[in-house]
Length: 225
Image 1 (cartoon, rainbow, N blue to C red):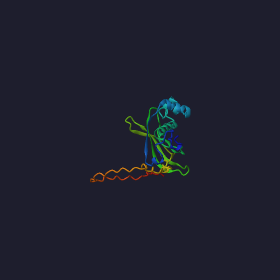
Image 2 (cartoon, helix red, strand yellow; image 1 turned 90 degrees about the vertical axis):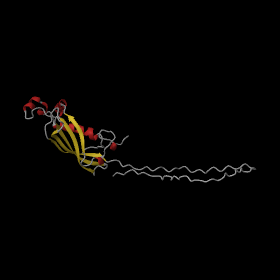
Image 3 (cartoon, helix red, strand yellow; image 1 turned 90 degrees about the horizontal axis):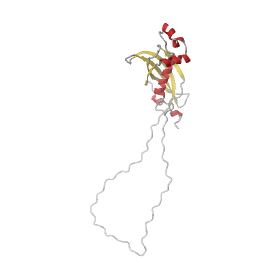
Image 4 (cartoon, one colour; image 1 turned 120 degrees about the horizontal axis):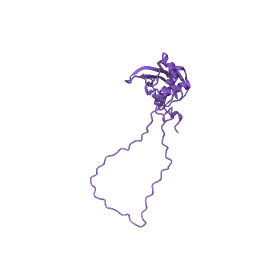
């Protein structure tokens, strides 16, 4: 069974490790479309403020209609983050958020482009075998031409990711078999003369090419810190 440290955030074998998440890396997390029914159901269950659940009041307000709960929007971000990054990376838990901002209202039918940028990474001093990665997540509303129109969410957070396992060489076991003595030459039958064969006329001899025996090589896998 694959050890937990080698599994991704969704339990599959991990492809990405702490060493792969270098500062400057941008990961595209795809595009999500806001489902109106799901958006309102989330608000009724978890954030039933009138501008999230009451169409008449929301229409008459400065909002001009029902808008999504900010926690619904960040939940959409989290799902994209899991689907497109944590499902591949050797992710552990997260120490938490440092920033979460809702920059513009989100409405039913909005198409939101999602991405994360790695802005920092260092081995964890508190959790041996893990590294701390600092990421910034953003969601951008797309226009009809698929061009970004407005940033609607920004968050900065930390995640723990397992270090890549260090591979070690396995030396071959020495053979324990003792060499066997060669069989003794068979004796001539008693009382007989050995047969003598007249040598054939010697002709010129030509030495064939000598092929050097390849030396044994030991390949040592690259060691990772």
